[in-house]
Length: 330
Image 1 (spheres, rainbow, N blue to C red):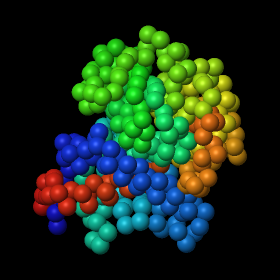
Image 2: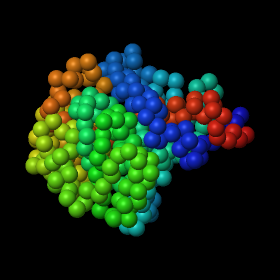
Image 3: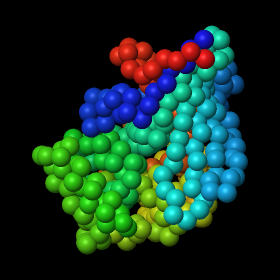
């Protein structure tokens, strides 16, 4: 028996971040994933195709370690993420184990730090395809970490009309570094800091992405212009609020990755709206979304584990095709 090991560098090579075709392929994959997830919740005959059991956690002195098993079609996996609980720690170390469909043993182990950000951004990419202005020019992204970078890449992939991207982040060093990295990756676009004139930048934005761990709002509804599309992905607990109540109340359409998961984890939505007013992404007929463009639309994602099986299965397949990674005896 052998196991395929995919390092962070291997995953970066397979993801090809900044490549529009690869990004759009992953958006397509997540669109199918959301659909199969919703079908599996409603139709017992489809339940084996998309399984997303409740995650479990173990507390250590410095982290909350989360274990998230899932299955999508022929890929079964478990992701392990360590969330810092002690001041001074940062990052979300993540690993995914993929199970061999025939033997039941572990087929692959991969660094999942980038995968979580990319699959989450791809979910936002679906909603952006559906609801954002097809000729969107201005993007504001809150957060300069992995999620922020992945959202910039994904927004440009699905809305190549974007010209001006403003980045907000509390820490100046990380914000300025991301802006410099983006300027090199996309020399034909304008990247600026949003911190100096945040309200003005948001008032002009066609798309806004919030990718922070804020517990107090950083985005306010009074700033939003008609027709803006919002992707809100940073908060994942009931006490976390990236956006204020007015933002949620002004949204004329609220889409979510999972009604059940958001009902337990999306603090902003639970506080200011009702689950019966949310629409789950897997139920949306994309051919009918044109009528909602021009409205203020909000997509809220807390992440569902079947997304991890989807993207890890893709990574294994691509690694085998391209002969990337190390295979070791086990």
